[in-house]
Length: 235
Image 1 (cartoon, rainbow, N blue to C red):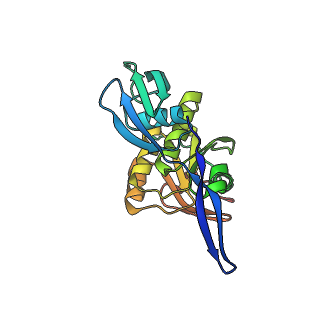
Image 2 (cartoon, helix red, strand yellow):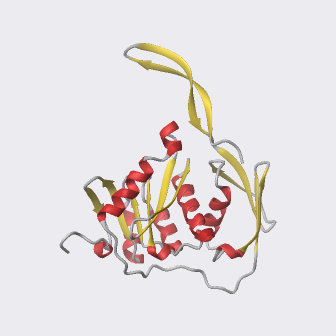
């Protein structure tokens, strides 16, 4: 595993003139992903939390149905090798929880990703935060890709045995259909973002029973689908 941040030369231009210095920048890690000895596939992700990424990525893709389905994992020299175990267990998918959370918990998720350290250093990372519906902060992961950040937080939840059906994720990037599909695959009932949703993301969330929330700010948010999971004061 390499460093996720490096230094690059810049010329900063401002009203005071120009200044040359080395600034911090996010590192793009280029890897070859090999599953069960098959054909290698190129992937790009930040060079940290790679096991969590692989777990979440393969789970959301339907390659594995639980953390126990990864029999071996190795990452070295730009190569990620995963060997899966055969499993008769059905995938742990589907969103069915009726548990409720509060706007305050969702807003706290947004506050947490604003504190993400690598984003604070570089401005070049996305973040995904996993919280319980009661508001306990569970895990925060960062990556240059919003998809990878979501995979990592899902993978961590699988490794730790978290009941993802009673958890929510708040992340920093847009919520298109493929991001919502990851929440569906993982059984996460509420997916939120400080950014926007797309029409296809909203449609899939409505169809699959996901509560989709966008533009989370202090004191306001847009709930697109299934607002019954959010407990409003006086309701």
